[in-house]
Length: 256
Image (cartoon, rainbow, N blue to C red; front, side):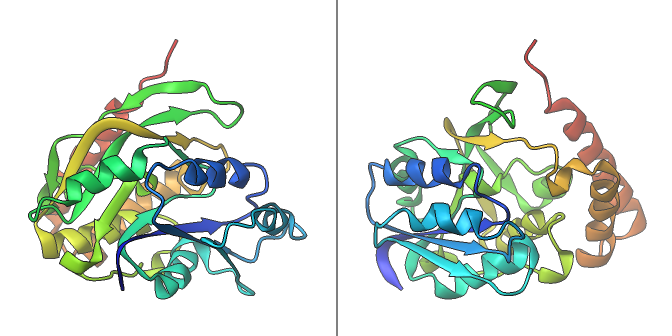
């Protein structure tokens, strides 16, 4: 582990359209001590996304070409096994960071009590750079029990300090549905709470073909996590599931 280094974990699947913007946002960071590990998850695009990544000659950008499609969890785990940094950051191949994202997130992690920090974010459409929902402003902090009710932690605007809490891997059997939520739940079992940076520091691109766009699968997966992964009893699961439905409906307010 290299102190001060940020390992940026980026899974990519058919990412040619947006991964260039993602990489550019990393290259513009005011904090320069980073490595970016991009794992192409056996994309069926004749190497289009890989070719975009290969245009960038910065030695801090590392490309891994997976020969087997493992889903976002598996692709992230491949990158995590190669990560050398003290800090683990995630950035999906269609999302972007503001230029001072890393610097401002790391300022939070200086506090000995803070192991994981997540920031507020813009929510933009699949085409262009316009906000389609109002920005999502995160709470000051969340505990494990808070996270069972709703998940304000977004994968592309979250960093944790592995020196303080260790290195965590994704549960691959979950595929690409609720895997990040379970990941944060696992970490919070160890560190107690995560801290929210209310400043908007990144953009989340909402795409129509994303895994979470299939609402029925998300609903089923949410319930399965509560009952089978977290082993919460029936009444408790009904309570947390109802809370999640309420918060889920309230957080998407479209811009007119």
